[in-house]
Image 1 (spheres, rainbow, N blue to C red):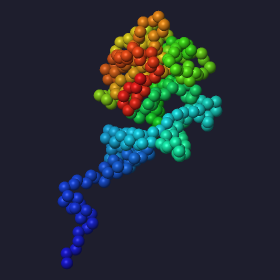
Image 2 (cartoon, rainbow, N blue to C red; image 1 turned 45 degrees about the vertical axis):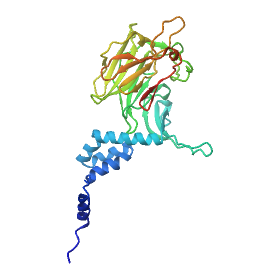
Image 3 (cartoon, helix red, strand yellow; image 1 turned 90 degrees about the horizontal axis):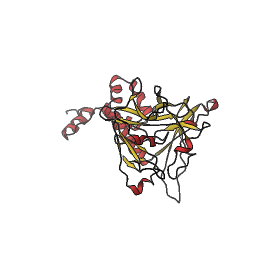
Image 4 (spheres, rainbow, N blue to C red; image 1 turned 45 degrees about the horizontal axis):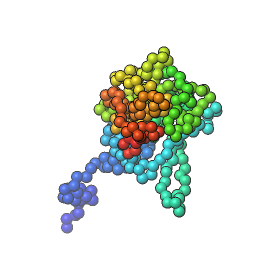
Length: 318
């Protein structure tokens, strides 16, 4: 009697007879399992071998992990917040946390989810920190308003880097600059003992053509000149001057209020025109790829009612 073939041969023959191609076992492991892990845990497997290191640093894995994480956030959105680090004296540290927002009905609301600590960073004071509105391809921009320093964070892996020093900006009085409708001047930007803030605003974007993150800063020079724009490209040695000319309406940006990044553009909300002033553009745009400024049309009747900008599922919300 003829013996039966080994199990692995039977499985392979069955798969081939059905016209299906079974992906390599390593490919299945990376795509179907490692993309489900938190990124901080997944990157540890880079040490297994060279093939895994190449796979886990490839654009394919990054996009697959980002897509799976985005789907999970859509089902269970998370709230990111920060507070003074308790482990450091004097509050000279900031801890970052994430907390899931669970769905539930009014009759039986779900129990509150415990916040998990992502990382604690020394040298940043929570009372002076301003975060970019949303992460940009895994990175978050943090501005220390008291020390005029910028940081790029990957809150998933805990990696962070301080950006090179930038040009000093002129000071602006806090009470005289936050004039948006329904905005409480004491709630944002954060309050601190000094009665002034830097007349600057900075955002983080991503250039799909080059695959690079860019930090874009609008600021008024201390020498009394007009507003300037400087750009820092991730991995570069320092800041450089932006390509496009800064329009005069940039003088109406709100200090320390970061722009919103949507589909290749940064958008700043400008201060509304005061009594007796000429109407001004309310939304200033900046192309990350071409580094050119522009405007977003806003109907006159709605112009005076805009009090914030937001990214809602890839669209600019006013």
